Image (cartoon, rainbow, N blue to C red; front, side, top):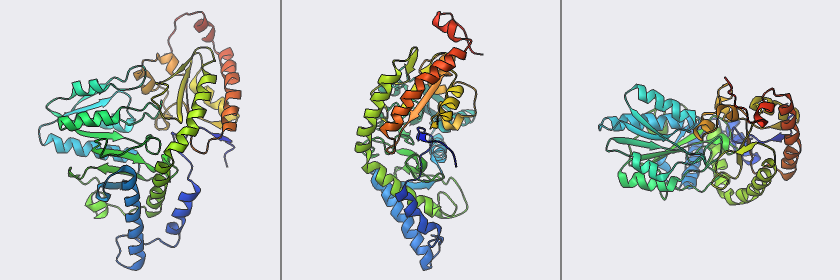
Length: 398
């Protein structure tokens, strides 16, 4: 087993909680029936499936028949965007609005749609990592088919003004989708009250199993099938349902939503402690607005430090963190999110994301703050660029 002692990469994935695991186990062992079957074993699985669907619907403030189970948040994003684009293109609307710092599940899908003749407006998010409501309003046109803006950014944790954007979209008659993978269980969401037409979420960000997600779609919109070949998910997504994972997600989202306030109260204290300590280090940047952010997500950039080296040094101390999105961890390019908020390439390369959960302890935070300044000083002492930086000499990383 890994020797990680302190896990601070919960924005990448979370551990399965005991309650979720215990809820899943019977459906991995005794309750293995196919929910499409009419005998008792199958009917019991179908009841479990419907119970989980109701749990998700209650957590989101929607109806059961507006919840579709998927394999992950990325699939949900793809389904929402592609389905809506095709639906609205038939009405002559081929303009989409998004932001420059969306998750790649959104950006890459939008790029594919652009190749199919759609026009996409990518709104700026400024140095605080927040899109302006007035920019959204100004970008909407007669041919706008969809607005898709993430609820909270996965890399820097900034929370977007989703209710206000939803209200604008409603007044303009434009479909509004939000990727809420990072937000679910961290902020209070009610899709009806916040005028959200479509929403994506993923189980493994809230202590459920990997490989299960949800797409919420307002029932006033007709969802086209995403996978053909069976009647599952009301004929929209063929394939035998992953009952253990879906049951686990139902438990996880119920617990996550119920525990938002208590978790945020705890993590906000940790967040303030980390920011106050880390900002004492020379030439460090807090990426994104200090207040309008998820309580458990912090992102710093350290001048003269390479992010990968920083992560490896932390790992040697038994601390797991990240330098950005886990979905792009194999890339040598600087984060598109950090570039979108105006960081230079050379500064964006030295980023550290710290993402906590309700399981994070103050002792773990104290240990991080003990070793981090030492690691930064060591890495800078080995850097051939650090002396140029402190002298104010310009340079570029190729």
